[in-house]
Length: 69
Ligand SMILES: [Cu+2]
Image 1 (cartoon, rainbow, N blue to C red):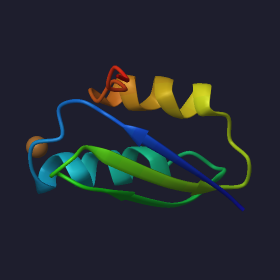
Image 2 (tube, protein in one colour):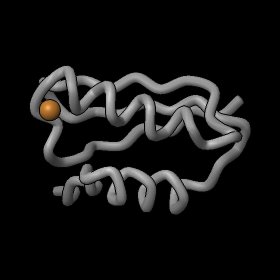
Image 3 (cartoon, rainbow, N blue to C red):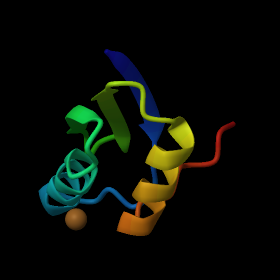
């Protein structure tokens, strides 16, 4: 089990959180997802899915990774 964490943009309400959770758990290797409205933090437990795949899926859902720094 691997845990990846991302800061993403556009998380505004519980509907966004649900969209992120539903969208990412649809990926076969993803076992668990949590997301928070307050800071746009998304945590994903998976069987080794790549960060690139997760980032592109989040962007496709409308939640691109936040710029760091
Ligand atoms: Cu929303």
